[in-house]
Length: 260
Image (cartoon, rainbow, N blue to C red; front, side):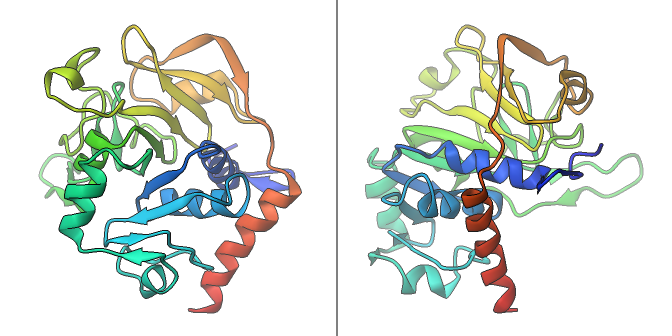
């Protein structure tokens, strides 16, 4: 079974998106990245956390889109927001001021210490590098939010031994690196994938497999990881999506298709 194969009643992507949304239960404010993080954050507002305040890099605070935004400049984010502030204010006052609970990020590559690459990846000998969207606000988000959640699909292409480029610092090379650099936030606390959930070990800061999704084995996760993955002694299992969660997720996606 591949990472995107269907499990009875739902897909691996839906498992990932629902579990990513669940990770926002109890949060007050979330600085949202576009793509999978935005799907998860908007689903959370429609399910486990109706009071969640969604904040986007373009300066929108309290956005309540009825469809998934295409970019941080999507007009619906401003139209449905409680307030729109200038981008410098967003970063200088709200983000750097420590006023945002959770940052939710995606990645092209992530390493064992949850460092992120969204800048450039190598494509092999005699081939040009592949240029990616770049940092955006991710370095500031990872530095200053109270904690960081990450969501991405699990493969050896994405979970690598060594990043091709360090765009955003997670836990550096291990414990203490963030403190040395004066980063006030806790950094990445969970990486949710289509196979399971990884969290940093408190002693080493290295990502450890802590939960498996239904129908996934430890061997599958290890085979999809570019380093020798450690598995928690207390490995848990995530709960399947409920009918209500699936309905809310599919409605969000369908709303976007209607506008195409």
